[in-house]
Image (cartoon, rainbow over all chains, first blue to last red; front, side, top):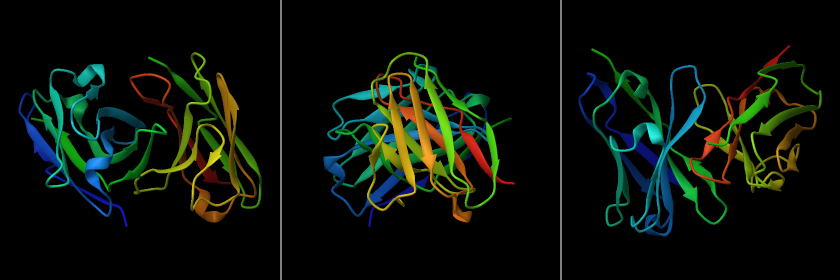
Length: 119
Length: 107
């Protein structure tokens, strides 16, 4: 059974940093692209970043480019999102998702972790 | 960026009705369109890939159609567990974008 478990969320002040983790199990992590998708309170889904299976290519939405870094450790089956220079508009639930690169959709999702940026 | 416009924003129905939800893209995206369901306080799950292709484990009452800029998600005879928010998502170009969602609620 595919499992994705996020951790590392919390309350952080504007301008500070936070690092999210996503522990994967139930599949060969190194075979799959992975992604982060977020959802602001009472809002819709917003893609944040994607990393291919070996970490050699990454993709970001413009609003987080230069502030967020997606990375992975295939030996630990873990995905990360380093978030720097956080803004209030980054407040959201962050979902880790497996990305089916061949078919271009998010096929499994974690339960999400809340990040609140506020002073 | 490709914008996806979903309509209606909210649809009120009674169980047993058959419904259609719309997703319109700001430019042609072929069939690079996927549908997700998000139940309250749950993570999204994929329902349909590439506009009309089924996903293993998804009930057959869910179907999709469309290409280019106009897409439809159909639910044949809505069940009580279908009351959720439905999102479309395009994979034609980066950034990947989602529609704002259609909330299916009990009338």
